[in-house]
Length: 315
Image 1 (cartoon, rainbow, N blue to C red):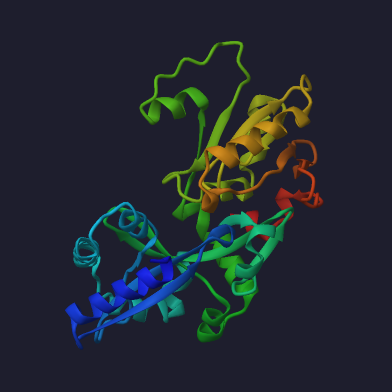
Image 2 (image 1 turned 45 degrees about the horizontal axis):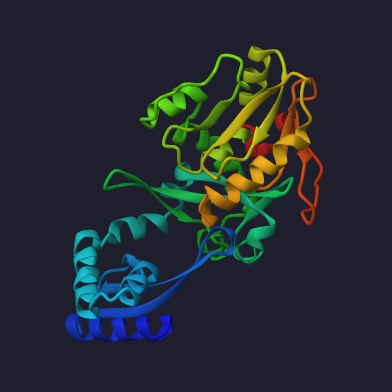
């Protein structure tokens, strides 16, 4: 049975079980880096939104011999554990007075999100794009948000420039930045840190929840302050959409030497949805400017940006 046939069969079985009080539909979501996931949404009548349960792993289980009725029961269990009828939150999302102080920005790759960028307000920064979300609160301990789309601006009656300015004011407060040494980061994840003293000095920059933390490089004054403390310019490795690796530029190595490392890590260690870029960035302390230091073939090498002059970075 092919994936689409499997998904429709599961939908039909769920529809029979749930009955007329529920709406069961197949939904395809466009995720970061043009990754698409097909899922099933179960919505109780009178409820404005519902969780979408993606089918990829269930289909793998089915191909491995798992009984489809077991899969359906598992999906119902997941729905039951995550079902919400947050009508109040939906009403609040329509209220721009509530929304405006919850707007934040995050960074994604521009080339790999061409389709998504047609649907959302954004601003291009080198080979990246700044997109915007609304913080909806914490759900089961997780940062819950909604991506702002063009139709939301029309519903709120606000301009794209207004959204950008709000995000610049809010993001640093909603998601404070954090810079750690590589040793500290490894120790925080439970790994034994045994980095030699003569190893290349590396620092990890992210936000307080380590989710979409790459946007911290646009926080006004952060790179400048850190580079000033070190007394050097910085190379910036896009580890993922969640974090960056900062390396002091002491002039002792060729930035091209880091390109194979970036490519290998992206291709073997990072989920496709979480890849930020294959480029290497460099921050110039004297100019307070960031630019692409090296980019792989086939990817355009865009110009730099002055950190201090970007509204998105003025938080």
